[in-house]
Amino acid sequence: MAASVSPTYVYVGTYTTTRPHAQGTAEGIYVFQHDSTTGGLMRLHVTPGIVNPSYLTVDPSGRYLYAVAEVRDTAGRAGGSVAAYAIDPATGALRFLNQQPSLGADPCHLSVEQTGRYVLVANYTSGSVAMFPIQADGSLAPASDFHQHVGSSVNPERQEGPHAHSITVDPTNRFAVVADLGLDRVLVYRLDLDRGKLVPHDPPGAAVAPGAGPRHVDFHPNGRFLYVINEIGSTLTVFAYDAERGTLAEVQTVPTLPSGFTGRNHCADIHVHPSGRFVYGSNRGHDSIAIFRIDAETGRLTVLGHEPTGGQTPRNFAIDPTGTFLYAANQNTDTIVVFRIDPESGLLQRTGVVVAVPTPVCVKFRVV
Image (tube, rainbow, N blue to C red; front, side, top):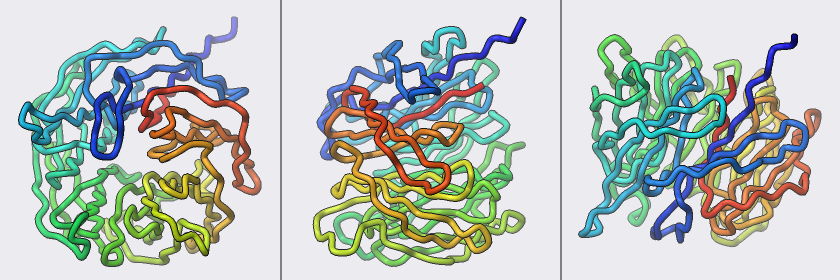
């Protein structure tokens, strides 16, 4: 008898309340089953009881999901927490385990390092990062480490202080890189998994152009290159990455917008294709996915085109694990639009699949 294949579940993070940048109307975290033939998403569940679960991550075992919660107190002051859920492998449903304060305001990104022992969190508004031990049942212990960033950059409205926007573990699981939009820097921390510490690295990281505003990053599958999307400058910066030393050296910076575009735009998310041949970035304003070819030897980029996302404000997006489909979350038009990726050209083609989700922000796959 052939072994049964576990279904692939897809989790969508959302905004549930009104924020300065979003009119949240969602109920919580949405759960779908993925159709690997059509790219379709069949809605299974919604998990309520969490406020603004704007970013999600699934642990390497596929047993647990972790979500940030961007909250405000009764006086309107920003805060935040990190919630832990167990995933039912038979249904994809989420069971709440616990939550911990994120130790900063507006947590906006989180990741699990590859041993599955710690969650790493970036707090945007307060500009800090924290590390949380994962307990035997998947729940979170209080933070084992915390770092408050200090400084500013040239944009007085967006860069008056630090704004940690993402924290991503490198392929060796020895370092974590933090894109701090407020500092115009990509900071590097060494992971001390024995003590549960984020150790500031020497050298401390690398700078992007003043006013660029680094937001999200993704590593090339070969581990030699890091791609950084810059929210304010609408650019993408390529760094050569030395995994042994944990150092970054800038290779190239390219615009994410077509020449001649003069409207308002802010970049959001970035993903390298599993093949390592292409990189994609989202434009909010131009409302498109920018598509680039990667030079295998140098990591340098050549623009291939810009595909409209079929909606407004594509916040985050995801590429399915096989590299066949791209899912663009259009935050302000309540849709996820599905594209098929041409494996030879890297270009995107609309599949006709449009999934209704209120205020979608983040799309994450669970694969075992």
